[in-house]
Image (cartoon, rainbow, N blue to C red; front, side, top):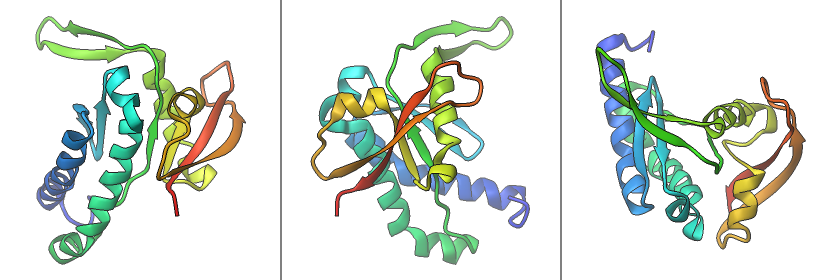
Length: 169
């Protein structure tokens, strides 16, 4: 952002988010919100778990972004990449706000997913999933889930089992 300046960085973000549209549609997800350079995608539990749609979506997003890397390099001098985390759990959805109304999701799973994402670099994987999700979709044809053990995530009292995700060779 610093190198590009705010206007060019905004152009990059728009192009970056556009890359993900097909994957989200193909795998039945819905964009909940954009936060800086992050996009939060959600599914109903049934839709997200069906044939590992939520995991397949993220892998397609990464593949689509890699495929468009030369275009980003030519236009912006950088090929963006991302790290992602996925988990399954209950979410409460509702409208809040007096001056500005907004639909919000709340639930421990949102915080837990953010904490799992924070482990990507530490664990050496671009995509991590929590144990509850890994167990719900395993085995998943074409996807390798690497068991990484139980981890105490920042701000959490209970350990969470983590799995690294990669397309199967």
